[in-house]
Image 1 (spheres, rainbow, N blue to C red):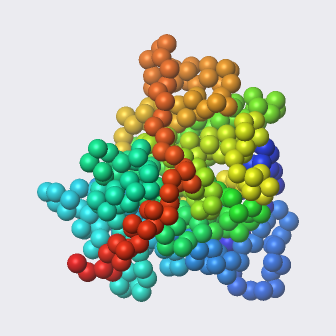
Image 2 (cartoon, rainbow, N blue to C red):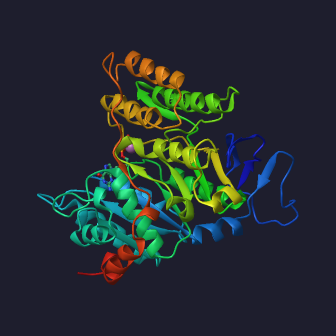
Length: 397
Ligand code: GDP
Ligand code: CO
């Protein structure tokens, strides 16, 4: 794979925020006469390097009642060496969609000789293990994990840890294009290979997000992401004193992290999860507030934003949830102790103008699940390990 080299990097405390890097070519061949670092301004990521990182990576797929065909396509796009972890919150009655997902995954794994895990978000054993770990905010009064994609993500990343992986990536199950899933994961691997620090994150920027309305329109910036990025940049500018537009992936759903970093971040419920990760990175490692772990301060944190070649084609859930998405994302910035008065005013005015909030209101505080490092991960592992085999897609019950 060829990527644009990280030409511009902005620092915010210990965080190295790399500006957008485009994929120049999806493949870079095997021929050794090509200089290992490619041409000027371009980095060559060798196939072996990509495979090395894929081998150390788990890909978590949160899913809730998506079309089975889409799910089937998504899993077919995940590179063979990655461990697939499906966390499903799909219905079991009247139609057992979870069973259908499990069967689909089982079939793919049998045909292609690979392993994968699939677990239901409401599995009592998972709830119990979370409870034992002290993750009280994650479980409800019935000792089951609460609804939500973020909650599913936490299950997934703890499973990745349990499986001994070093990196975890997240891809949605409602993607129409298996080829773009393959590209996302290759980008994750490429990003990690460029990281200097063991604490790293790769966020995907979609090349285009087409809209179908009669013809097809290749849209680059959605209103929600544009506004979220603007508020992120306002927050950074206020702290550094220099205006910036470095953040371009505030809402990126497709993203990956080293597990070392994943353990340090809190996970906010709903659409707030991805923006909250960034907010927390800036809070812990931005240098303005008391710092996170000394190790991170020492090594720094590498944040990559990489733009795909494939367009993003996912299930259109309508425009009603866009307001909720904007509100959830901006509320994470608004309620951060880093947020200055000017950014707060910008957030309120944007939310009101875009009718995501009534005038003279404040955005609600996001529900935040503590970072995994703050709970007893060891207890989760101890309680889940005996059941791991039954979570395998190949397990026949
Ligand atoms: P959008 O793409 O940001 O509009 O959000 P989606 O509604 O498409 O959700 C993103 C992904 O999370 C999809 O794969 C959903 O199926 C999945 N998802 C949504 N809610 C839940 C949930 O409660 N639990 C789990 N495990 N996955 C969920
Ligand atoms: Co979606």
